[in-house]
Image 1 (cartoon, rainbow, N blue to C red):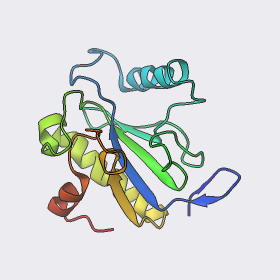
Image 2 (cartoon, rainbow, N blue to C red):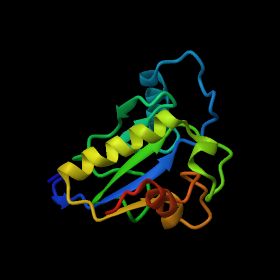
Image 3 (cartoon, rainbow, N blue to C red):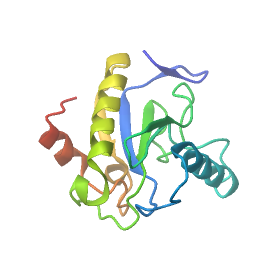
Image 4 (cartoon, rainbow, N blue to C red):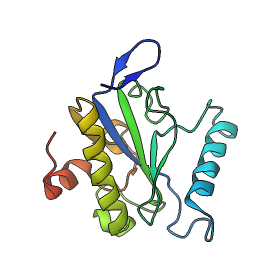
Length: 156
């Protein structure tokens, strides 16, 4: 079981996000450099102590850590405790119910499925939602997570 912080919140949910960056954001930069840029934005522009997401998935399927899973994230107001935030690079012009592959790559999809499987093997996950399900008016992550989960045969 994964616990978050001193309050020992057990993790029971995953929340999927996008970085709201163009598909060709920072060409030539490494995945690590792109994560560092998001981290810097979250710290300097939003005033957070660290990057808000726990995991990020680059366009080539590279999965990189953000904030430690044991630390409560900063990814959805009112829904951070007990959840892990996963963000996909891209999604700048996405709409809430776009098909997954309109804004993301096959490699990102495979990596997301693998990451979900990994986290579910370590924590008692009871919900997987998109940011747009918890914050009306948001397009993020740029697809409707319940439909995507059903299409992929992922049950929680």
